[in-house]
Image 1 (tube, rainbow, N blue to C red):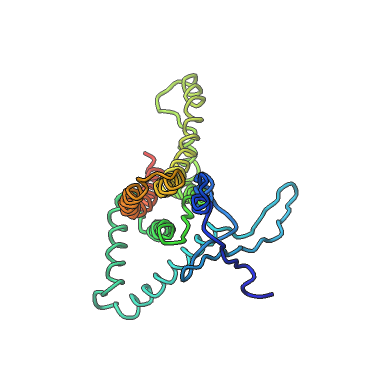
Image 2: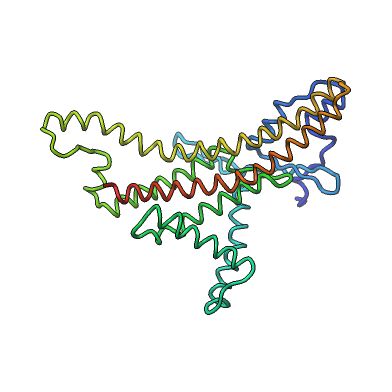
Length: 308
């Protein structure tokens, strides 16, 4: 089989462009969904020619009533690419720190990374977790740089934002939930951990103790679920909203062009100007959302380790 078999040359532009060229109303909704949602194709352009990479489709795995499809998708590809980029950046830096900078200050990229890592260790991890915080520095930093790389990949041409998929943010939040709860059990012991679920204020008589258990236990359980859910929704919604706004503003150009309005040039200039400003804001949001996810993870670990 040819290595070029999964690739196909695009004949013409996307739905919005082709519709505008034909004088018909462009399908902006279809264009938005095509670019924002996950899929089995990756589109890119080389020297003015558009290509589509059809990702391989594997046979699903059947486990009793469950059917699991492990076929790679567009967001999975960019998630793996983000992980590879993190490894390519930080493994050489780590080796250089051990080999070259044991007795002197690092320079260049290693110096910048060391400053950022020390900031996270001192101002995010230690400040929010307290005693024993250094053991969690690696996990918090991994979260930050991994999420940041996925966010930034969605801003490059022909890229896709894996964090705009709630399955990806949900998986990150689920891992964080496991780390938080295991950290609490290790720090508090089994009995101390169970008190974070079945909590009774001291000094109550037996009847009031039972009443408080009935009231507070569901609240405590919902609180444990609400924390990772908030992490999932916050990251997903912010990344999805920014890209939706950018694509919608660009879609105005095709809407006015298909309507044959004479103000289309002015609309194009205004749309491009607004999109440029929003893209600058999106770069800031990419860093901010990665930082918030990492910081709140440290906060949640600190809260359960020091339940008092």
